[in-house]
Length: 264
Image (cartoon, rainbow, N blue to C red):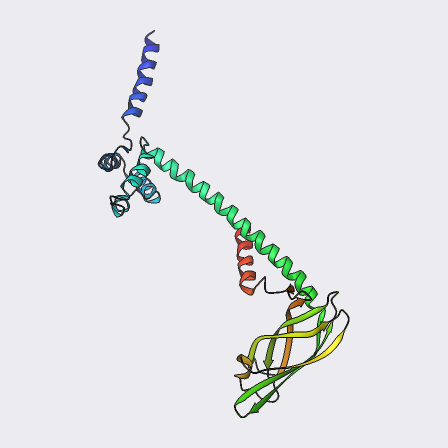
């Protein structure tokens, strides 16, 4: 009998201690700040650091709440503070740790979605490049013409359509460089619509001029060599058929970074 009474007293003691543990009072702004100070007074060392860190993580640190001191924001702040009413220091820290775990999980999901989107874009771009490679540039040259009142550059390209589609226009990436020099004179797009188009298996030579744009602004030597690479093919419906624009060098860099984070 005596042993049972002692056990009951011990349990009651633990219950009273638990009840006596200070808790957050979210009933009002003043009560909240007072309860926070009471909780801090019972903590020291690592516990105090963790509690203050938890408050800051939740935006409940005194200076953070003070920044929101406005009649318009008062109802919002009071509602937010009330959500933590009754929590002990340990309970608040546990809440932040749980929220942190959820945040990390959500971040992993977002990273995975970005990774899958970039991988899909790369796969589509790889397919497009395979088709673009079938549109061959057999020869390319550029000539500058200077006339009174205006200058122009004329491109002469011989191409073969190795795709299975009629092509109404092509966007090229042109590079004009002198052999032996590391830096090109210019690297820019060359866009050309093809009247009548070019059918699958057909080869043709096209000559066309630019009177405006970057190409006529550059002075280049006579021994500069023009190389061009198709980056977009326009179909018979005047819409892009294959394009390498959907996956840039920046996308490739970002993809590698995300892959590295998945391996960590």
